[in-house]
Image (cartoon, rainbow, N blue to C red; front, side, top):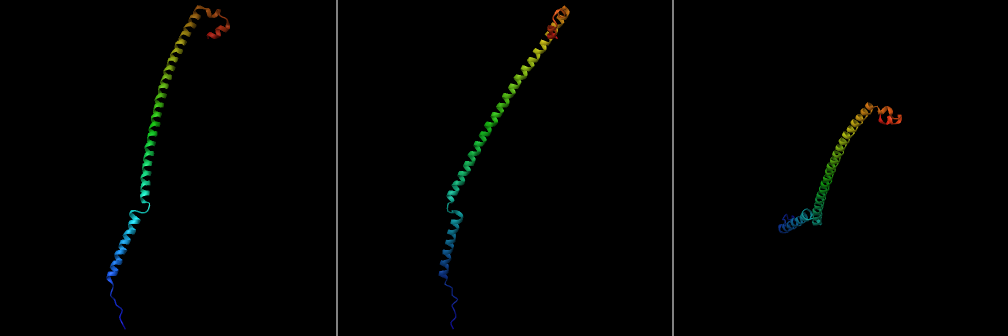
Length: 127
C-alpha cells in the first residue's frame, strides 16, 4: 500500500493566495471606495447642499424684508395715531371754548332780559 503523500504544493497555493488577496482588495475597492455611481451621488449631494443653502439665504432675506415692512407699518401707524390724538385734543379745547362762549352769551341774554322776549321755539334752541 502506498501512503498518500502529505506534501503540499506550496507554489500553487501561494499564487492562488496572491490572486485571492488581489481579488478581495479589488472587490473592497469597488464596494467601499468607489461604488458605481458614487461620483454622481457625490455631485448630487453637493448640489442638494448648495440648493438648501441658497434657499435658506433667500428665506432669510425675505424674512428680513417682511420684518422691515412690519416695523415701517408700526411706525406709520404710531405717527397717524399721534396726529389723530393731537387733533382730538385740539377739538376738545375748541369745544370747551365754545361751551364757555355759549355760557357767556346765555348769561348776557339772561341779564338783558332778551330771553323772555323770544318765542318759545327760539328759547329751546338756546337751552
